[in-house]
Image 1 (cartoon, rainbow, N blue to C red):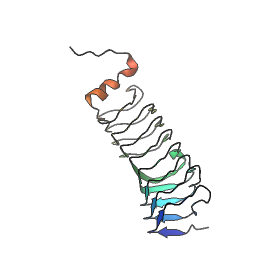
Image 2: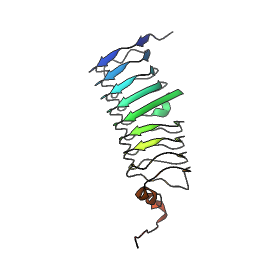
Image 3: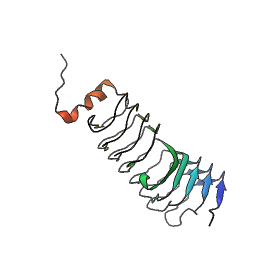
Image 4: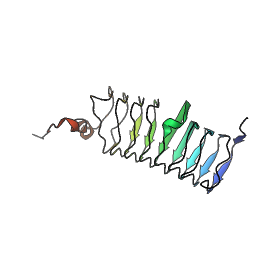
Length: 192
């Protein structure tokens, strides 16, 4: 059964917590101030769409396709992005709260996180080469066997990344951030 093709539509202030968004292929659509929390966005296709000021916390994303999708000022706690369809997966996050979400094992080269809260987010075994974490809070975020080569952490705070358990070649850190890389090694650094 083919999904309906919905293009160039704006959905504003819709509550999809009780009545789910109809399954379809959404292209160049805008979802503004919509509530999807605790709901279902599984088996949907979103291409070149924007989610603005939406709540997607704890939403089911099983087999959902996100291609060139921007999330702006969204609350997205507890999402399992590894459940998504990873074919052509491409999204960006700006001013979003993604606490307790998971990107386990995903290939997300050049991924953009701008001014996001990523508290206790799981990046285990993710491919994040040349990604940028601009003004992000990574408190308690999990990096294990994660490829972070050429990624930018210069303005990031509260991260703990073990250089022995992750790939960091040519990753960028501020001076204070570079010292955080030594945190697990119980090394004391003093100014002379």
